[in-house]
Length: 498
Ligand SMILES: Nc1nc2c(c(=O)[nH]1)N[C@H]1C(S)=C(S)[C@@H](COP(=O)(O)O)O[C@H]1N2
Ligand SMILES: [Mo]
Image (cartoon, rainbow, N blue to C red; front, side, top):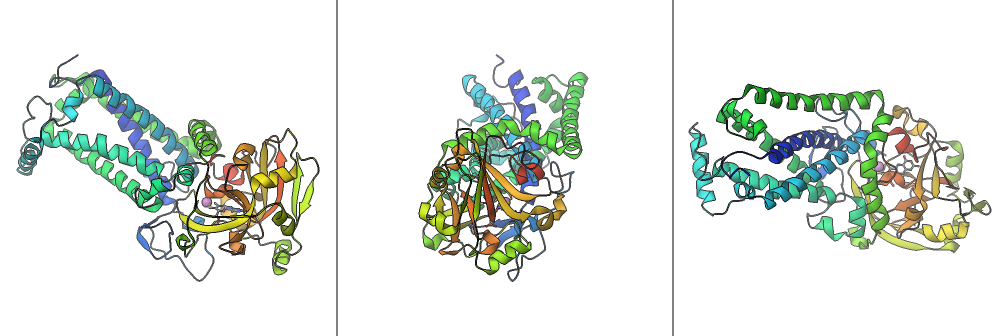
């Protein structure tokens, strides 16, 4: 092993390279995700007009119905991955890159600690602060400070690297986790550590800015300290002067990252379905683990209820639905079909007799907004018991009244909105069929007469305006076959605990 102060071992060179690759994908897909809801709030109510900052000039109207999807930006593809309104595939890239980046980081930290390389990163004397100040002064005089004793770089660089590795990176992971509905449902105190989900989301964005600033300055320093010598050192790990082959290797490495990004765009453009099927599986495992093992335990108080609750999805414009609504849903019957002993048709009063519970919980839309409300209805576990599904039943499918070709024509998606839940997830606590919101009959925009609540999942799973419920052994024959309308047309994952 080379002694500290000489070269960088191969594993540092390699993890450094992988870090660049993953950070580029993380940043670009992260921008994609945040443009889906370009508003930043200081509390989890996301009340329009109370933004800390926003990336749109348009003002959200309070006097007419507006859905959050109407506020998604068309992201420029040179900046965001995959660009345009591609949050579905953007999320797959984000989670895939996150897993690669975290793994790379773990390998790096472990090797750092078991070798003596940690010495270059971790300051061992308070002298580092005055030394860093001195280095900064030297830079300000347009001169290059000498390396600190025994280190290949100066004290200011050491402090910067230490901060990025041991502060910024963990904070970015921690604020990312604070946005997960599954984690939030099981441990509502966790996002509170950051001041709530929306503050965590804002900090996560500031983290992106901090990483970007670091990369820019770091790259500038490499140039200032002397390209191509520094470049050679990055590739070979050794200060051997200029090595043209190493410079070429380094450039080739950057070219690979560029090509990987172009390929990612081509894939998303040519076959978004293939992108979904290829990229989602690794994080689906993680999402399933979180969603099936973490049960919702939310008990907010009435005073926590949001003064404004966003909606997503416009109400069914059809006459049969409007007729029902006119009569306060008096003649409404919920149809239960599929793998059940006998098909059922239940009124709201029938449902009320099966069970009744209330919960004050936080809703999380995949686009990024949240809102707290009280929901009341029958626990889905009790409802399922009442339906007597046959042993073949593995999924519960909820069909809405809304034909998305009419309510969201811009996606090109057709058919009534539907979503499926694995039976295991369906019987988890605080999963319910709700007909009341905040103590009142469910308002039409929020899904009257009946909607689903699944508190460890993102909002799109919670079908509104439920017309029928179907027990199935396989969801592949429904819609386009991917387990839900947003899975079919927005390329989302079927289980969304993050
Ligand atoms: N039938 C139907 N249910 C739906 C949708 C929809 O478009 N149609 N949108 C979903 C999405 S994306 C979200 S975030 C939640 C929003 O619930 P809310 O409008 O009551 O806030 O409803 C979900 N349920
Ligand atoms: Mo959503």
